[in-house]
Image (tube, rainbow, N blue to C red; front, side):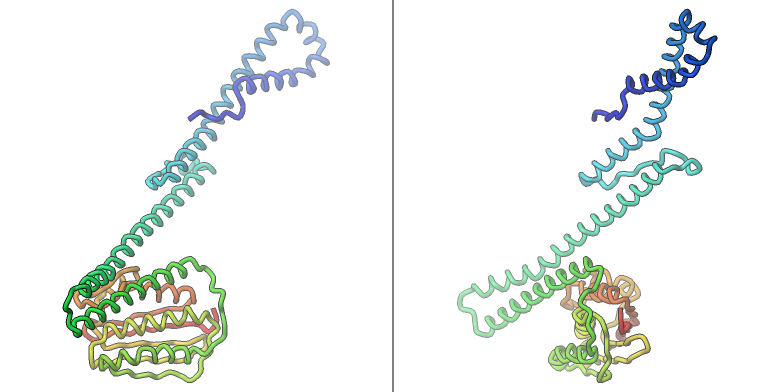
Length: 344
């Protein structure tokens, strides 16, 4: 690439010649002795000015190139590589720490930016790979049961079974897509704009009612202890995501004849909701990775899920400036405790 030169060598040279002449003007006009010798030795004075000007030109141009132009060229080339997708770029400091200047700081900030962009690119790649994998599972089931339904001479019982599994797989796919869209929206939403004052106890009760049929189908006992009225000034849609995903998680991991308990209390600052189950519980590793996207703990139990529910809960709690605690023991059960302030 051709180097861009803001001042040419000739321009530098003549600028110093002019400056040296301007500096000599007082002597030319007011120095009698200088006037006496200016004509016989004028050629030597001119040669001296030319040599000095050339020396200063070379020195200043060298310093300018070393201190500014070369680092900017390095930075420009590194920027073009990053723009083309190369996030392995690292710019070494041009000076020691004791002699660091603004160029070093620029290089340091550039390296931080490239590191952050590389992390985002890795996360995006992993996310796309995980989404693709999770979508393939219900799609394969749908295709498989659709082929089964095309078989001739199916009994009515077989047809109903295949239709049931087909509907279940399509519902799982629908839930996965919904969760992905919700999570994407929440991660790009820095500010919650739809605040309103509402009764969170009524909201929690409605969420619980939507799960009662599933609990009764699995013979799960449920204990509910919530207040009649507790007012929050928050985004109700985001708070609802927390309750629905925690209740769904408790339902999936609680066996028949188990127990699910929901309690809600008010505090000076907000509310506290505890959702407990007598399910399979979690190991320490699962608890540490619980809120990661697409992470599923005990896959040996073949529990339906896509590993996005808890990631959604964590993001919602974060947006509300709340907290969530997990207490779990393998074979005993799990308790989620959510603290949400009355106002964000």
